[in-house]
Structures are given as C-alpha cells and as structure tokens.
Length: 394
Image 1 (spheres, helix red, strand yellow):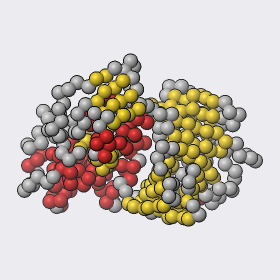
Image 2 (spheres, rainbow, N blue to C red):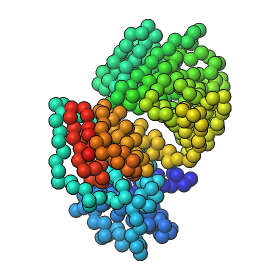
Image 3 (spheres, rainbow, N blue to C red):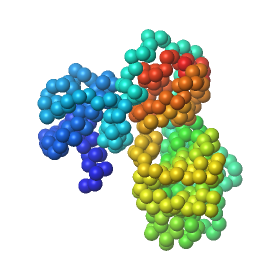
Image 4 (spheres, helix red, strand yellow):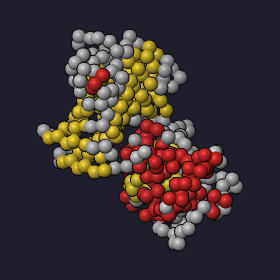
C-alpha cells in the first residue's frame, strides 16, 4: 500500500474512533499504527487537539480529548505553533474529509481563534431572500440553439441524452459529422456530464463546456472548456482504437491518453491551472509543450505567456467536486471569489487590508452563507453585512 493510501486508511480509522463507530479489528489497526513511531502519535494528537477538538465540532461530552484513548503514548513536550502545524495536519486529514467520512469544519489563520476579534457584534442582514448554497443545475444548449434547463428533481430526455437532474448522460452512436452541444453551469450551480465515449466531466460553478454529441470513430476526441473549472475522468484511448483526448480552452490545450485531471480557467482570472491527478497529460501553450506528472500543477499566466510547474496537494485542488471547500494558504480575496461563485453573491471589501490575509481551512459546501461568514469572522474580520446578494466585509 502506497503512502497516500496509508494516510487515507488511517484518516478513516481516526474518524471512526472520533465518531464512536470503530470495531475491535479497526481499533487494533489504529493501535498498531500509533505504536510504530512517535511521529504517528504526534500526527494523531495534532489532528484532534489542534484541529477538530478545539474548533468545537466534536461533541466534547462524547469524546474526552485528554482521557481514555489519549492514554496511548501521546506525549508532546511542547505545543508547536498552529500556523506551522496546520499544513502538515491537512495532508493526513484531507482524504478522509473529502470522501465524506467526517462532518467537520475547521478554519485557521495564525491561531485557531483570534482573541482580538470582537464576536459580540451582530452582523447586519437586510436580504429579502435567504442566500442558499449552490445546487445541481445547468443549461443545455442543443445543436439547433434551443435551450433546456437542467435541475435537481427534473428528469429530461433528448434525442441523444438523458438527465436525472444531477447528471447528463449521452448515448454512443456512429456519426459521419460532428454536432456540438453546450453545457453551461451558472453561479450557484454544479453539474456532471458523461460524454458519448464514457468520459465523465464535473463542472463547477460559472463554467461552460462545448463538446460533440458523438465523437468520430478513430479521430482525436476534442472538447472545449470555454471558461470555468472542470474535473475530467477520461475514457482511455485503448477503448477507442487509440484515439487521443484533448481539452481546449482560450490559451492552451491538454492532450491525454486516459487520465484524471482538473482545469481551472475562469474568465476573471489571468491564470489557467491544470492539475494532474493520475495518468499522463501534455499541456500545450503558445507553441510550447509541458508534460505533467501526477500531483503536479501547471500555472499558465495568459498575460505574459509564462508557465510554472509545482507539486500541489491534489485533494485540496479537487475537493470542490466532493462537496468541500479547501483552502491552503489562500488570501481571503481569493477565498471570497470561490464563495461568491457558489452562493451567487457579490463581495465588497470595505477594509482592503483583509484581502491579503491568508487562511487554511476546510468547509462543507452545504453550510449556509451565514455559517461560512461566522467562521471567517471568528478568525479575522470585525464584522460583515448582507444586503440582498451583496456581502460587505469590514
């Protein structure tokens, strides 16, 4: 078992322990892992003590952090600074969170809570309608230009595809010419599409995909991410007579043989982010080509046509498709940009100094906007107001 899978398994065991659902066999496995090294014991201690327990997510009456299970050789001589701990803790905890094992929320700046922030002030909320989290919805534009609204709970069927309101699935047919459809996901939406070759695409809020209703046999399979963010799970070329798969967008193309990757190319951002989860991809831009290895991300700056490549936390990058916001050392300005797309709101920074404050956090996308803002307020901002669909941070 590789290291990533080990971390995933251990995270699952820890979550079972925290939720009181662990059986003897699983508990023995967790015990064995803890006995292996002091580093493992430190990891376990950090996850609970510094993250989930102090964030008041766990029921303190059901789980006593300093009793019982904590008698398993959890010796820590000094308490490290949280700003250093949290990035290390994340890589062990994220996998379990992202697969829905834990129902926790944590959000940090320099400390778990900032005592200088006055949380006694009640935010001003004057919106006439509650701001709801995003949901499954999209607009399908057919080859004749007609449009069909897709939304959760509404089943539809066209000549080439069916939808249950959460995903759109195309039939595989032989064709002699390419005919294109568009799937557009608005702000406050998300949707999944399965193309005729079996490739699955998850579209994030404010995204648009152009694709053939059916691919031509033996020819390169091409789609276009017109804008936005999408996660691709590509049907292997071996199942399509060696036909390659390409994803085009305004400044680059990604060529794959059969793999999983994420592309983020929003219209209001100057960078295009391509992150390889597994397999092989070749990113082409401005006449150049860049090969990516798994867990690496290319960042194309379309303003000056330069590219940088670095290893990233893949789970954090793709967490959006699992119903999680994941922020690692991200400025509040960028965080609120993500929030604004999902909740379909506008954000104003009355205090411009807040824009550059960096956070580390994991938030459930099902939380209300008030819960999200309250969590952020507990760490840095003094206050916020909500006026209809405009949020002002103070």
